[in-house]
Length: 353
Image (tube, rainbow, N blue to C red; front, side, top):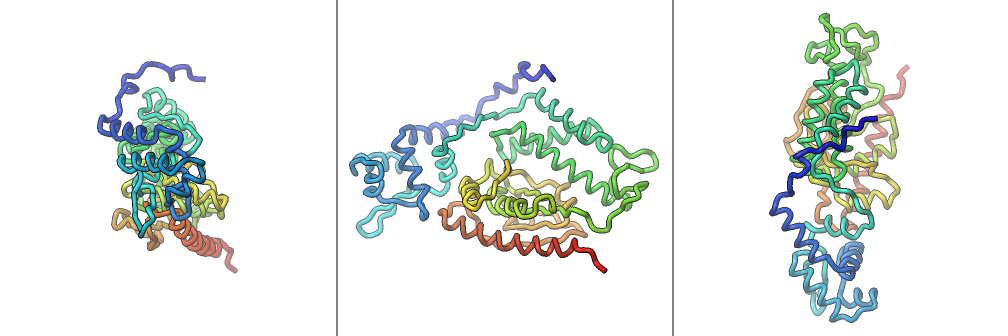
């Protein structure tokens, strides 16, 4: 067991950006009251995402003036939107703050790690180098680990579980790169670190390897949307649930968010589909090259096009800012498309006579 993970690292003292800290503090002040947390939880949990002061007061056993006081404070702080329809005043969570509210009203307390210490990255590198021994050198693995960490921390702004997400992201990228190398080595496009002077790498499908499949046994399906926090996560979770190990599923975003939309997580949970620890991640070249199917959902021209892959574009609404019934509708439409896709994949795998 390694014992050098607790050593001091000056990077671990890097402060959060001041403007971001002030935004968080304002939000925390507005929600720093158990009654407000209860009110927000009830509002965001409604099917249409809105509620009246009277019904909230009745549910909590409070007077309407007391509830109105809390609603006014949260409205002034930008947490709630006020919409008067006739003589009734409806309150809803501001769309951009739904994720914050859902995170606050959940009971779990996830540890925050904004910076991964160098010894931890070294440990991840050592572990992945063991996994990919004979395929990639330790130096190559280390480069992918460092790059994956930077992409998640800076581009995707991941803060929760950053060490484990870094390990998973780097591992997925290296696995995709190995598949690309094996598939294209006969064309001289790539060579792995394990290649000898003759070009034989030992990877299936490369020169010197007897097993060169015309069709991959397990197809790779890549789902891409803008933030990798909604549509692509819905599709990937449903496909994994239905296909099991018959399909390898990856996701990416052209402009990834810092976390998966909590309403997407809730919508999946309603139908018994786990998200399985997924997280938003940037779109990288090797995962596109390794994919057999690339399915885009509103990310425009951000996804590079390579020959030999099947590209599909699913025209779907973005769940950002939608109430729960809107997210459910997108989920159900995606499920129907995924079932059709899986049927096509299964038919392609049937032996021909």
